[in-house]
Length: 431
Ligand code: SF4
Image (cartoon, rainbow, N blue to C red):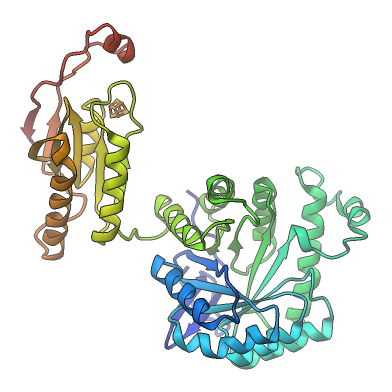
């Protein structure tokens, strides 16, 4: 993991929603140092903004799932008017997503939106852009300049422009497209600089994960504004997850990216959940709730682990807020190792579950009893952490398992031949 790239910082929100910071590390306009803010997760409502009740419900649902920022589309005046009723009823900063009609941006600012998103591909008139900049400047609101591969201008001349500009990034796979995206950003940001407006976040999305990686890498070298990462039109959750994480994970690991949106053709709650999981997995945000480890199962499995893991996941998501590590392992090959590193762990053997809390064996139960006992132990451990009687990540004992299979070799072959011994009693030595 590379250190986070320092950027200017933008601040979004108000006293009621709380202030959400994006990026940081470079001095602010007064020369005061800023500290890089944790990478934020944002998403976008899927319903109509002018349907006030359902929009408020959706925003609150997304905020409850962990969204730091929620964006809404405002294609019509009735949508910007609805913001006047929506914003006082939600507790998360709201971004108005504006395409084609600069007046929607002005109306959204007047209605109390916390940030405006403009697309250089479809709001190009210089005087209109200046009007939006001035409206935001008067209220201290930031603007995201979001250039998307699919909507950059010169559609009719795109091929010619790409040929002309292609030489700029000729050594990169998407050199021509990159050049046109960067050129469009440069042109657009010139207007903002002329207006002495710097509260800007930048995005440059594509549905092509490799283009997203290249585009943000190039933009990170050229601009010091915070970057909003995303793979646009990534597809349904099932495939869009991999497409998004491939690009965003690579960029975040390289220190690039200050706020992320994963976009699925699915319930946007999944976007929030997967965005948070990505940041937690990379250690870029403090985890909320359980860090669940589970083995993939193999020919050594001795319980119905897939069902058990889903049951554990569902119950713990509802009941545990302490970021404890829980391991659910199918046998004693890797079980003891994971149990040592986990706060609460179970590993299965001979249709039973052996449960550990911070390396200490606390139960040996039959398969039907595993779920309930594991949940009990997790809840009890959470209570002890909250009372200050236990600390996350501590290990009390070293687990020394017997080798159930013998010399390294084909476990499957040994199982097939009946050579695998049933797990023997474990030896636990105090460390
Ligand atoms: S823990 Fe056991 S059952 Fe699970 S994958 Fe590893 S060896 Fe297989």
